[in-house]
Amino acid sequence: MAEVLTATVVAAPARRPRIAWRFGLLALVVVVAAIGVLTWDVPGTPGSRGFWIAVDLRIVSVATIALVACCQAVATVLFHTATANRILTPSIMGFDALYVVMQTALVFFFGSAALSATDGLAKVIVQSVLMVGFATLLYGWLFAGRRGNLHVMLLVGVVLGVGFGSLSTVMQRLLTPSDFDILSARLFGNLSNSDAEYLPWGALVVAAVLAVVWRRRHRLDVIALGRETALNLGVAYRREVVGILVLVAVLISVSTTMVGPMTFFGFLVATLAYQLAGSSQHRVVLPFAALLGAATLLGGYFVLRHVFYAAGMLSIIIEFVGGLFFLIFLLRKGSL
Amino acid sequence: MISLSDITMTYGDQTVLGPVSLDIPAGGVTALVGPNGAGKSTLLTIVGRLTAPTSGRARVGGHDVATTPGRTLARVVSILRQENHFVTRLTVRELVGFGRFPHSQGRLTAADHAKIDEAIAFLDLTALAGRYLDQLSGGQRQRAYVAMVLAQDTDCILLDEPLNNLDMKHAVAMMGQLRRAADELGKTIVIVVHDINFAAAYADRIVALADGRVVRVGPPAELMTPEILERVFGTPVEVRRDGPYPLAVYYR
Image (cartoon, rainbow over all chains, first blue to last red; front, side, top):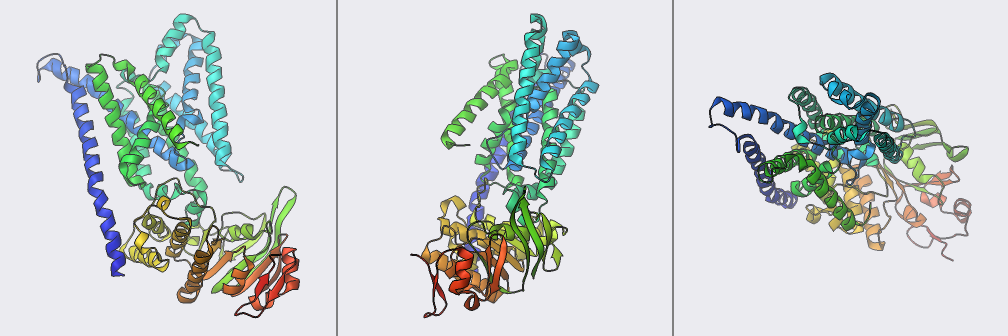
């Protein structure tokens, strides 16, 4: 018995300090990048009234970026857990496509003026409710039944996503060039788009979701082991998975309505988090993913804005890098 | 311990199992044997609540499998399927630790750690406790899964072909360990085995299934006759009784 104890006690702490170091380093990157974005190149002398006004404006950007990063990272990890598959991203379920089709339909039917005329909290809420409602219906219908099957559900999600995409393309073809121009500016994720008005509401919703997720962190570890093992360990698998997917839908809808669709960012961050966290426990992976997301987005925003003067390009670059990374991951893994 | 009444399983209009009514008493090792497609694994997964039967009732330790909350049931009966593949990368110790989930909901106490150590030691995995599952051989991995189920510390343990992928030596060791779990820890163990001779050598009772129905239930000595085995497996079988346990010879 004594041998047993020493053998196991030695193994654990050897890894832990390294993980703590990584975590600390990431947190440092986040803080430095946030301070950088807030104070770099601010007009006016530090401490003056003009300085504080500029910083106040930038706080909105920083908070939005942190929130979106957190949403995307946590949502993707949760999605991986629920589907027991690490190469999927929530966008496979057609969330982004739904957002695109809603925006396109608005311009198609009411003209591009409607896009800015309807902007406001009400529209954000309606959009989010539609996206979450769509997800809940889809999951509830396809998965909660007696013959519910995860793969069928994913397949239907993919098909619907493609369907929404085609529908958007058809409508976009019929738009006038100027309407199309205004619309496509909206459809690329743009972190400078953010509006202070939605921020507190988004933050509130995300905080509530994260609290629920954190309470379930141990159960998530079990769900990641798959249906049979989870059932054996006494977890109500089907109910939990539907619950997780609805939470994912909420996070993605908040993120999408704030800055537009992002396809590969979550995948990039989640995959790196699994490597860095050195453990598959959600209590380690989730904070890592959220921090990594914030570090990537804030760092990238700072560099692009103040070094290359191209802040609007960030999400495009991240999607490019993320997509590339996704392909490399797929090719190295050699299978789905 | 396990009591099944009129269990049936149908897919469309095809009945793959039943009606089966069967009582398995507490304690000892019970082996489910039968040809491919006889319904052994289906029966086991119904008892282990992984599959819902089309009709009939399954009770384990007095709990109705269909209506008892999963959390309660997870402390009464545990089941291990033959195919286990996890997306997450786990060490042996982490895997075995999951067996304590029904008791501690993920927050492991000192008592949980003691149980985990015990289960690891019981299956001779102490030296491998810190290794990742993907660094183990098939036999070692199989033992790690069984250790997880042992750590779950349920009275009833269901194993679907625990000898799958094991060579001669490891198959014998695995059966010996299951025998010990039944004898020393007082567990009720139900296994699906392909090799009738392993059942004859280690089990206290054999349940023979064919075409979705129970053909015969009894101790190995009683069940191991050419007539019964030929009826169950549909192939000529000779039974030798010159050793310590009856041996079916059917290879040619």
